[in-house]
Image 1 (cartoon, rainbow, N blue to C red):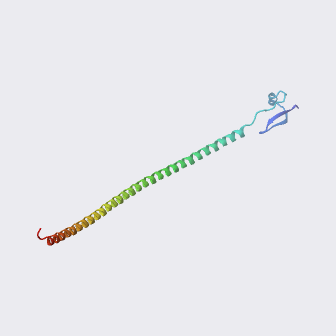
Image 2 (cartoon, rainbow, N blue to C red):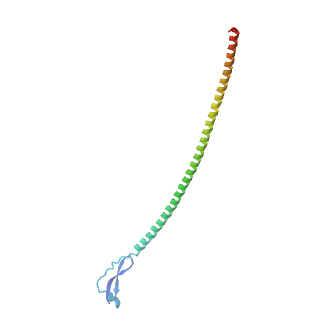
Image 3 (cartoon, rainbow, N blue to C red):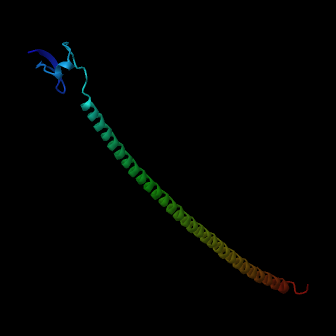
Length: 149
């Protein structure tokens, strides 16, 4: 009965067991101690794969959020452009109204000036009439005083 201590891979550790060698098992071992140095990388591979999946989901989530944000920013920008166009339109209307009011005041000023001019002309005509009357009266006084002249 030959017994040897041989390593056995038990997942995360290498365990040593005493084996009896029979038949074909003996052909695998030559009596020396062999240490299995193979590292089990299945857990790391699985973790990296899960991380890749998580980063992929994060990437798609961020892209979706940025896409939504981009559309919202575009929407706000178009709203601002629309408001700006409306404000320009209203400002143009106000400018037209102010120009209309300005024209009205200009016309009112011209009307007031013409009223004052007519009043002055009427006053001038009245003073001319009075002056003519005074001149006629003076002429009568002169004619009465100097009858022989």
